Length: 280
Length: 280
Image (cartoon, rainbow over all chains, first blue to last red; front, side):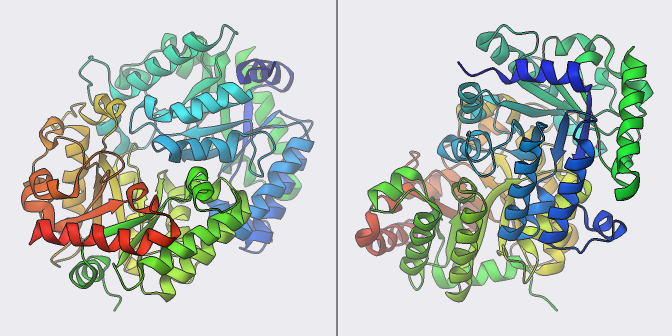
């Protein structure tokens, strides 16, 4: 029987800590690293991040937009980066924020969550503007393949507030509704310490603004971007997420990547130590 | 000066009618067409749809998930299909439903809406779970390049209702909020008969359920999937969209594609005639 993603994630968090290193092959970073703004540059960038992460922490999160920007050549580069990450036994979360209906959303699940697929990863991010039920094709694919999904819930940009705090007919905010729907899916699916479906929650938000609290995330992995570059300090992790802090994947990208290729290993170690210290 | 997408769209609707032919390279359809379930099969499928559409109607909408399913090889196939559609002077809407923040969403805009990019199209679909403002990078890119964006507003799947009818602090539903925000963007951007930013509205919904009416879409293109296979009949177009019916891109995929390669041209002509008849 295939191991559930939640179980794999728990092992990874225990062995490698909670830091997740973003792979943001942004044109500005490529330039700062002395790499060309091309698919080849994005490939080299990703491979170097994988190499520096391996053995230091357990999770990477490539931002797929920066590969799509280079078309099919960019996707071929991404496939090389994903293969290298798999070979290095890193847990890979593709930041793709896909969402759709029916056979289209199933096709996204097949692309990213099928063992042996060229774009195979351990988990993907998804968007539920059409309701969590619209993602069933992805969630079922994840369950069958031992893969994970992180669904956008509450995000840190100010323009998000109007939509994500809107109140549904059942009295929940849109963000809290996503979290509740994910909790329900996990409860119906498995009984591990962590479910295989998680949520994305910006590290700089006030949970209460969205009708959320730290207990909303019981048993659910939380992918939290925004540490470093976007303003949240890692030391605030317990204050921001309270009882859920130990489920949080602390995602940092620019703050680590801006150290450049030579300083990357040390930047990852420092950030990982900071995460570990504030949770000790 | 670059022509605005809205102006290009008006010309296309006048010369080619309002039918938009979906390119859904679904495994089941590939099989029915005698094509392999591979990137090569998806390429052949797309090229044949482009060939059958050219000269009959003016707009195609490739569903990108069915190309992503085949990884970088699928994207290379898609690039060939997009190039063929450009050569055939078809207006191409990439159904990608992308959404993100900051430099990530800018990268999506660069990927799909930059002249000369391998994935260049005329317009893309997008998701505003993080607020329409989160898409600024895409909207600005569209404005600068004469491209269009269709933002998901109200969709036809039942699971969408809770989120899309949730009430924002300003009293609008989430769906009506997207429509109002798009109207505001267009008003601030240009003065053509149709704006360059539109919305996606499922053809089988009751607009009133979402706090919308036909007048919500004044001056705004509406991409309406769901005709045919998903249950809406083309003849219902005036009844469904009222005063906005002439702004609607009537998107049909399976109902046309299931005619098979030999029946495709006739199926497109029949559907186009049906659209024209009900708007006459």
